[in-house]
Amino acid sequence: MSTGKVDRRVEHSHHFDSMIQEHEAGKQGVWLFMATELMMFGALFAGYFIYRTKYYDAWVEGGSLLDWKLGAFNTIVLLLSSFTMAQAVTDSMQGQNKKAFRNVVITTACAFIFMIVKYFEYSGKIHHGLFPGLGVWNPEAVEVAQTKLFMTFYFVMTGLHGIHILVGIGLMVWLMKRLKNDEFSKDYYTSVEGVGLYWHIVDIIWIFLFPLMYLI
Image (cartoon, rainbow, N blue to C red; front, side, top):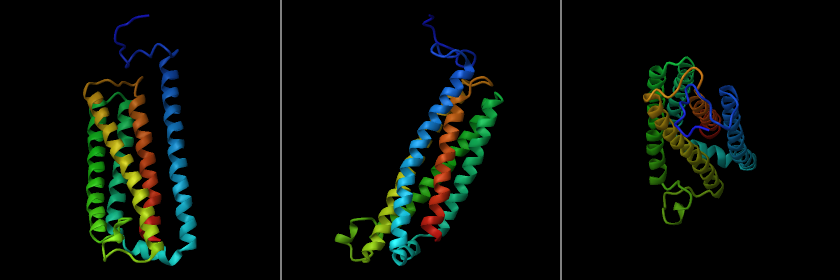
């Protein structure tokens, strides 16, 4: 077995029989990971719905404390990022690494914009004492216990989603480095597709979070 560096564009790893097998194994691994992510967020969504049914009025009050315009703006930003990420995958499948690089750059920029907006949104909530636990000393904090529970769900679910956005940014920076080095080809684009799948799941989770938290 050769110990030299493998050119992933034309050669499969030694523990696979072919490029196709390696690609399919990698894609299945990403889908398995995504399934665990959906189970985690699914449990949070279930808890959200249970308490929303039980404390409907407090949930409505909690939703009124959020700025739906900022949420809508971030939704548009993520939809754009999903389109550019999908285009990057298509470009890499066609061996067009330069085009894929540009689309990943745009996707990363959208991710940064999302997090900047979230920073200002969180800052406003914390300033007004809406962060869980601040009511102990902040007189401006929400007084209704059930509304505090809504804000806890808000910060936990959107915060966890934000962590996934940051992970996505890291993955895209890694992709940009590899695309810049022309490491992908028509036969090998598994990493680009895997990051694309991850990013689409992150976007889909926000598509559910936005209306539940901000609109209804």
